[in-house]
Amino acid sequence: MSGTPRRESSDRRVRRTRRAIRQALVDLILTKGYEAVTVTDLINRADVGRSTFYAHFTDKEEVLFSSLDELSDLLRLDPASRSDRLLSFTLPMFEHLHEQRRLARALLGRRGGTAVVARGEQIMAAVVRDELLAALPEGNSPPASLDMAVICVTGAFMALLRKWADGELVATPAEMDAAFRAVVLPGLEAVLAEQRGRPM
Image 1 (cartoon, rainbow, N blue to C red):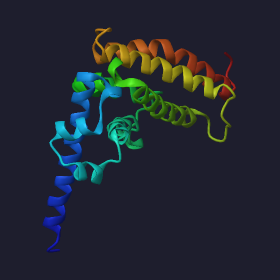
Image 2 (image 1 turned 60 degrees about the vertical axis):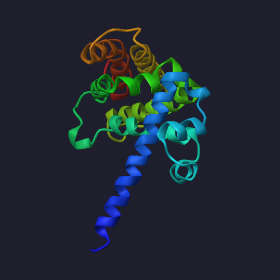
Image 3 (image 1 turned 45 degrees about the vertical axis):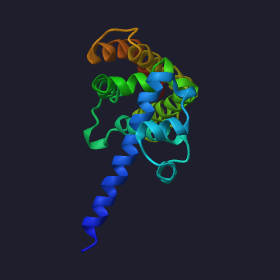
Image 4 (image 1 turned 90 degrees about the horizontal axis):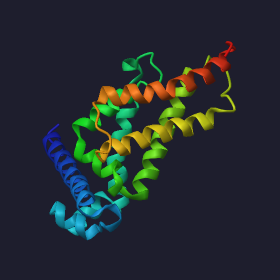
């Protein structure tokens, strides 16, 4: 019990250091683009020692992935809080990125680079696949078109996010969500209806 305060203090320091390094990455991406950022840049911007940096991250890509993984936690809503709406993560994601505009611009905008886009699409595709599988009738095997549906939904969502993050689209989170759902949901519902044996 006597070690608890020290452990909590250490945990706070770890979180604070990791947060400073992640924030440094966001700042640097916005300044010079992800591809041009070096570990030395991160160390200098976060004002940490080299050994401290490597105690938390192996390289700049791991810093990037830890930031994107935080966004993926938002996408994977707790089942108890999940609505019956298909792709129920979309509005919370638009709202979160609206509140965190600098983060959105750094991770999803044009300065983010190919590694950011690839990781973002990988995370998104996994979440979309899980949602579609959960929407299938119990015991049904996935339709042959599932992979194509996942690619279409992921591509549309990521394209909207990128244009929005860069300021090329001006809309509220609710407007973004409504536009995305209006275009994507009819196709998904058709795929699911076919699987349930309902007429198209």
